[in-house]
Amino acid sequence: MHELMHCAGGAGPAVHRTILCLDVEGYGRRTNGGQLAVRAGLYRALRRALDESGVPAASCYCEDRGDGAMILIRPDVPKELLAGPFPARLAALLERHNGAAPPDARIRVRVAVHAGEIHHDDHGVAGTAINKAFRLLAAAPLKDALRASPGVLALITSGWFFEEVVRQNPACRAAAFRPALVAVKELRERAWMRPPDSWPHADTDRVLRLLALHPGAEISVPAAAALIDVPDAEARLLLGDLGLVERAEGRYGVPVLAPGPDPGPGLAPHERSAAVRRLLGWYLGTAGNARRLLSPDRAAAPPLPDEPGRALRFASAAEARRWCETERANLVAAARAAAAEGHHDIAWRLTLFRGAWTDWSEALRGGLASARLLGDDRGAAYVLGGLGYASQNRWRFEESAELLTAACEVFSRLGDVRGEAWALHGLGYACRRLRRYREAVVHHRRSVLLAAAVGDRRDTGRALTALGYAYAGLADFGSSLDHFEQAHGIALEADGRTLGWALHGLGYAHHGLRRLHTAIVHYEKALDVFREFGDRPGQGEALYNLGRAHMQMSRPDAARDCWLRALAIFEDLRTPQTAGVVARLRSLDPRS
Image (cartoon, rainbow, N blue to C red):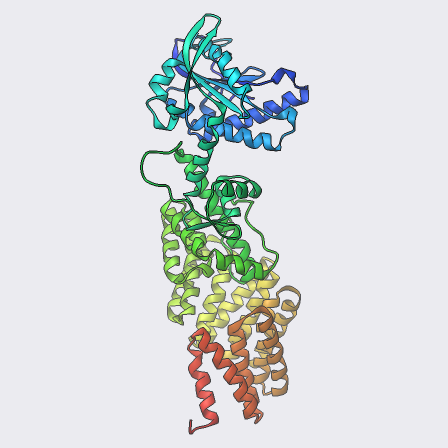
């Protein structure tokens, strides 16, 4: 192992240190390759076990001993960590290493812990306290205990360390220790030893504590793997071994720890924070992968600097949709937990994932608070844009226009071209709904230019489609048709979802030019595409306008059929368009 910190050279006065010594069982009987594999595995586990136990590895002094190591820990680090969380974590990490290692690379260790005065000089460190720690490490009872057990770690402490540290701290589990008479060279002492078979429960306690951090009531295997920081296969085994209730295939009830004395080693604050962030990042990354399949037209927030690489990926939109429906409650809980735990950069991003929220506007307001707490103007702009789109869902288009205008101004100031194009698209739509068509043309034109500037064909097609509808609002159906034709060409090659609206727009433009047969053909093609992608609002719009075209061709029965089908969709979606369809149906029979 390399040094865990910079070695302090030069002679100096005595300083107090906690002394940790380790020795690998059977090291000398291995091949050179086996020894190198053991050293790599041991020091990797040592660093991680120290850090995750609240002992900063970078602050420790280490001397390599070939088949082991001596580590000195500063006096400001609580000593109980070295007899409680640290050996339990090290044992768990060594078990994990051994499970994947060949026989010649498996590791079982003896560990000794003591504390006392030591001296640094030009050659390293010295002191009777160090001598005593190594005598403890060589004690016959410790060697015998490890030899007789299938476990991976046997721990011994000096009598002083046991009485002053272990016995005084519940996390050290003094009852698990037993006395051991040590007679090595000049040392004759009653020490205290914890046998190898006492460690598995300690790691179980840690896993339970990690799982209890989950903000929702149930957890999936992949989410548990992210939280515990193990592969999925290992997480599945751990969840099964813990006896947690499997509520559905691969989904387990989250443990609720009972109040009272600590049943095992606690989690260091940095370990707790890191575990929560891993979990929240996993939810964010997986939700983002689902969004890209389900709603590719929605803007994606800038990625996190520490974006996790283990998020789930989906083979199809149907698979992504199933995940979203299953994890809906957990996504809501994760966003709230992110804000409560201070992970505001994740909190505002999660609130942009609309599918999880019953009240998306409320969630976005919380996300806006998180972005502003961070002083993240770009994040605030994305949330303002999200609020603008949420207002459109409630048909509050004046409010939507104000929010999206504010978002556009921030994106423009920051030079975020994609963000500005996304906000302009929504702003143009709000203006169209408010019949401010000339403003809509201006916004959609700029959106087209921005999308083209970054080379985004899909967004360019969407922006051209929107611009076509803005021109149609001005009754400029020639310009409208031209833009719909451009959008249609792009959609055919780049974006099947936009294809439905481009086809509908072609129908709308031909309709305005009184080319009714051509309009009907395009409306019907659009209807087929909307059905393919499950776009219910699109189906309703296509059926409504198809009914209008049939009516203008004196086909009242065909018009009635289209409007009845459109009415069923709009009533199901609970949109104000219902009233317009009802009026059309009544016009067919004024007596009704």
